[in-house]
Length: 208
Image (tube, rainbow, N blue to C red):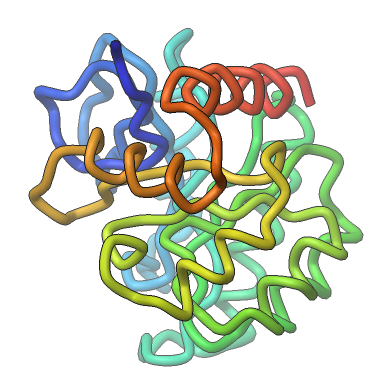
């Protein structure tokens, strides 16, 4: 059984969405392309958007990762402008948005009104109350390695609707199948049914 890795940085993983780093060349399998808050070049923002536009090949699955990060030195206003522009690009090309968010969840929620396409918070590992607020605002959540050992996050996954989440490895070096097995156990369903549900969720966000 193949397991889809919603967000990863490994060029040898074809069954998933490869996160394309800034100024890199896309692979020949599904990828996401965006300007991460930490990569914003205030002296070359137009150039960075030019790179994005020129690399949106047929395998481009999503815009991202993009978003807001309170630890990044880039001015908050500039982060918000770059984030909003990427949301608008996603609207134009009808692609979902993969979001990087660090301590800016309610600011990110405020941007939902601009989005016409699905928005997915990648690497979600915060408390249940934030998850509930995101879900209430129709965000999807993508969970990573922390689900394997974080009991609080396991409870958050438990209350997350089956049609509202994905699973990912991100930068962590482990087998995605471990995460699927744990998620199936937490949700009380078979591995096959979970895998089928994730595929359905992908089709839903792909079709807007």
